[in-house]
Amino acid sequence: MKIELIERLSQQSSHKTLLCVLDGLGGLPGPAGLTALEAAATPNLDKLASVGSQGRTLPVGYGITPGSGPGHLALFGYDPLEYEIGRGALEATGIDFVLGPDDVVARGNFCDISGNGVVTDRRAGRQSTDITADLCRLLSQIKLSDIEIFVLPVREQRFVLILRGPNLSALVSETDPQIEGVSPSVCRPLTGSVEAERTASLIRRWVNAAHDLLEERDQGNGILLRGWSTRPNLPSFPKIWKTRAAACAVYPMYRGVASLAGMDVINAGASLSEQIQEISAQWDSFDFFFLHYKYADSAGEDGNFEAKVQAITDFDTYVPELLKLNPEVVVVTGDHSTPAVMSGHSWHSVPTLIAGRHVRPDQQVNFGERAAISGELGQFPANELLPIAFAHADKLAKFGA
Image 1 (cartoon, rainbow, N blue to C red):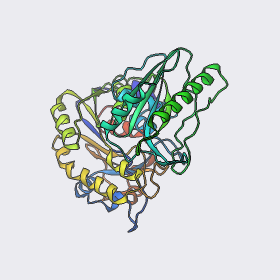
Image 2 (image 1 turned 135 degrees about the vertical axis):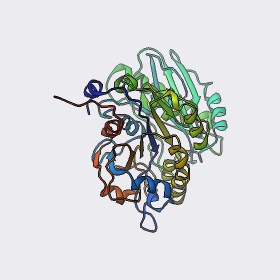
Image 3 (image 1 turned 120 degrees about the vertical axis):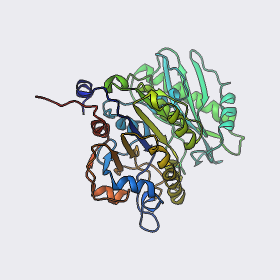
């Protein structure tokens, strides 16, 4: 749905909507022929499915594998092809760094590189945030002429690199090949502009200096950069929907995308239990809550099918606590699929469940990929999910006479 039409039809409503995003929820069959969602013990989600409607969302389009940024923008009702935000801007905003007009930013990973220059672990064993913070302080020693540089830790192996200065461009290539067993890519300009050429040259110099400082380490002896971007300008989510919106996410990147959309980012603590406690404390202050749960995606990216099953099982145990808040509309979905058998994101559709007021139940009594195929909602673009959910919450007026 077009943003202009949403603004025209949206209206205030006292009915509360809870959007639960299990990152990387969708998957492919594992060893026993079931997906991780189907294999998980989910009696509470299944109970919700028995009174709700299921379907499948496509985050970007047929055959397109989405990043987390586009996946979440779509869930928030934005067309991810029209409103594109780089991963760097999302990560920087997620740690409350205020991007300026002359900033170019990338999301970085500390990684492991072998003696012959090949990436052996893109995530350096998911090293602790404390180690990453120490390494960021080390890399902050690197100076380049005419620009200011910020190297800031995010979470685990992730960090952000911000270049600030005149005549910079985000139209440069990534150094992260996104696979292991090959060497890091070399940053190149993506256009023939003087700005892109200059920026790529500065990045190459910084990367070389960083590897010199890290080369003696046994773990985290290299860096990978991706998602070059600048400060975006998104239409305001609360203004579009005429709602008070809160985001509760542990990981900075997801706080970042919510913040850029104009949501209030509330404290998430460090666990799902703490997230639910904070949402409960803030329940009367907002009409819409976005709850992000990361761990199904992490397990899928690690290729660990059983860990993904366990992450989904763990989430299910907290569903009764969420329902005690009495949201009028509950949505459970993912921003994309992360099949453990692929160890990464994929283009597959994402199982989606809506329960609550005015829902037309289908015949499905389990929440999963196969059940979603036969569900009431069918398959539809992910940016149409929120209009459907908000319609159930009486937040969309009638169109036409």
